[in-house]
Length: 121
Image (cartoon, rainbow, N blue to C red; front, side, top):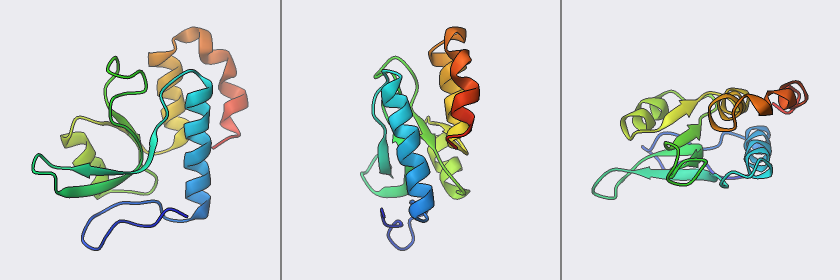
């Protein structure tokens, strides 16, 4: 299991089940031809100090440099604010992330996969 963040730094993957959900979400994105996300991504401020650990992040977007930075944060509170302030679009579940990708990145033609993917969350 990927460990929690260092003391005083919010975030991190909570348990093996959460890690498995994130890994499946990441694999789904790659299978759709998108960039691979980074598990337990260390979000830093302008001075390079760690601010939070994002569960799963695409710091350069799911389409590198074409889409905004995004992250999936499961059961996280403080990290949402930190990530939002850093310009990330945040999703509270793999399901919400996949819905965004289908609608806004891949377009309506990908919507036919929606029902099959619901069971992956």
